[in-house]
Length: 113
Image: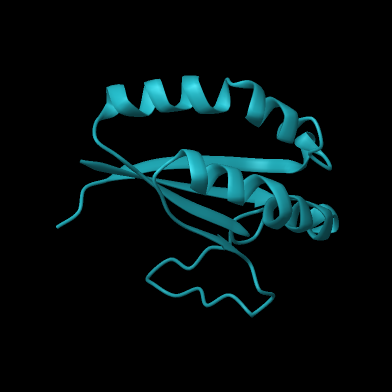
């Protein structure tokens, strides 16, 4: 079992249009077709940055985070190929407000303890 934690730094000047697209189209499709644990969008609250080296990221904090649960790496590869390579997602993606608005995307993997 593995969890994929995806964090995006989406252009803040284009975030409202992205949020509408995500809420209305992308998230319902992703939740129906992948084992999505949750999908979170920035709510505008101030970021808390702490620690011994609290250096802000040049793009600020990620404003989109979602988590997908996979059985294995092979399951992930298969799921992305079938779901994100399929016609349903391609149709939704064609209505994306600005696919170049992703300033940075990060995917990291974790195991549940």
